[in-house]
Image 1 (cartoon, rainbow, N blue to C red):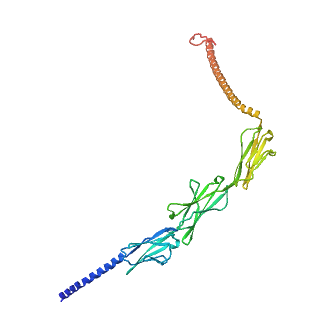
Image 2 (spheres, one colour):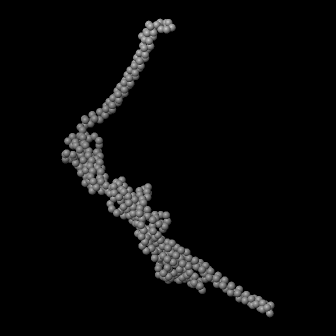
Image 3 (cartoon, rainbow, N blue to C red):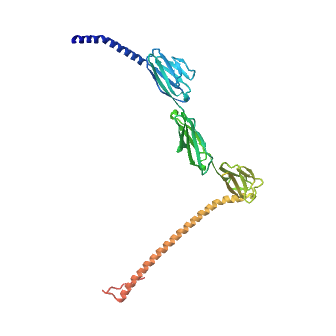
Length: 401
């Protein structure tokens, strides 16, 4: 009985084996069918105003319904047919392998998940995430107040919209020396407003120098947007008079030019003569004073005076008018003066040589007399020894002086 039951069980197992095998094959087919109709989508990043491609890849598409929806779950395309009247979305490819949609002039509100859905016995879908970046515009540079020599200037650089937040830096002059500023960031919805403030002291030499604010951002791909600001530094004026020639003679025309510098530039330039009035024939045209047909009566000190709201300045020129003869004598006396100077130098050198020679002669003579006196002392001792008679009966010696 156990043997028969066992056999029946075995027979029953044999009868069920084909069913199990069939069920397994069916599941494999369904799984294979599901795998064959899977959808794949890729995330996309685009700059605001740019063009984005949304791709939905199909695996062995069998003609089932394909629906593309925007982040608001509005249907854009239904099996290749436009469903939403937004001409910025264009279906450029619909094949058994891929559905490709192009979005032009992307906006920040277009950002989100786009659904690629395949309706079969089972619904398959994938979401393509569209990210919209906002590149910065050219930075705006503003100055707080007018820059004045010796004071401090404050510049503000701002970018009102960017996503992600742009990076701002300050540079100065052509060598691009970086200036350290203080940055701040404010979030306005999905975008950021960025500012950077820099402060530094200025002198008149800084007038006309260039300060640059530079913005960098991922959408610029290594490039940068920058705005240059030319410093306008105000300072007190200076005046310098330049004559048309060095020596003035009777009958010549004198032209004096007053070189004026200052910011704001002085417009009121005053010419005058110290302790007297300008000659009647003198002509003044702003920076230039002209006196034709000079005479000795025109001699004097001429002044140029300028002023602006930061200060005053003046310069003077002493005019001496010579007659032609005096000028010739003055011109020919120059070589003689040079020759006279050379002769005086030679005489001085000769005198120095004579002094050295006399000094050396006196020194030699003094040395000779010193030796001579020393010799007399020795002779005196010898003579005294001879007269007194010395031990050992030394022979007589005579010395002549």
